[in-house]
Image (cartoon, rainbow, N blue to C red; front, side, top):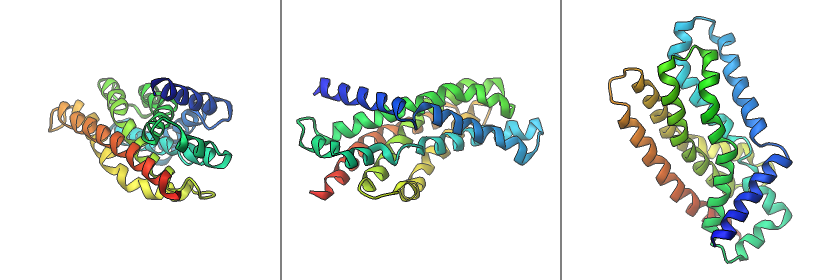
Amino acid sequence: MTRAFLALLRRDLILSVRIGGGFELVLIFFLMIVALVPFAVGPDPNLLSRIAPAILWIAALLATLLGLDRLFQADAEDGSLDMLRMARLPLELAALAKMAAHWLASGLLLALAAPALGLLLSLEPAAMLPLSLTLLVGTPALTAIGAIGAALTARMRRGGLLSSILVLPLMLPTLIFGVSATQAALGGGVPFRTPLLMLGAISLIAIVLGAWASAAALRMDD
């Protein structure tokens, strides 16, 4: 099962690079959102510094949604999904492998790139490491929650918009605690550790429930 899990993970990572919609598109989309904010709100460094954590987290959330509609849809179209359902590897682990591949191609890169892009928003140096840490801890929850919507719309043509509408409300707690943790690192009213631990708990719960719910949704056609 371990070999099958790693093979599926490697396959999805390779496909995300070869067919597009992988890390290049995610980073470009992330950069575009961050670069547009100063044009919309003005070049005031103080204002940009205050809203930088929220803007970066919102940009990361939207960038994570890219490619989620194809997480299971491509496999449903070419018949690979039927083979996964008949394989010895439990469908929950198959869903987990695909979620991990998506996170490695999006969430991990966003967490690493966020501090550098934060310079465009006058992000304070003291917030750069906490921001990257919160994204590392919180983006797995975004991917796991998004995978549920992707599984529910896997058999639908152009189901990406519907999938985003379904999962966006469920992503709000992750967004709230992610921004709160970053602001806490800048001297907020609560210790940085408190919202960070809540963010980690949300991610752990989302990963477990996301793998189980995605597998259940994929079995609905049986």
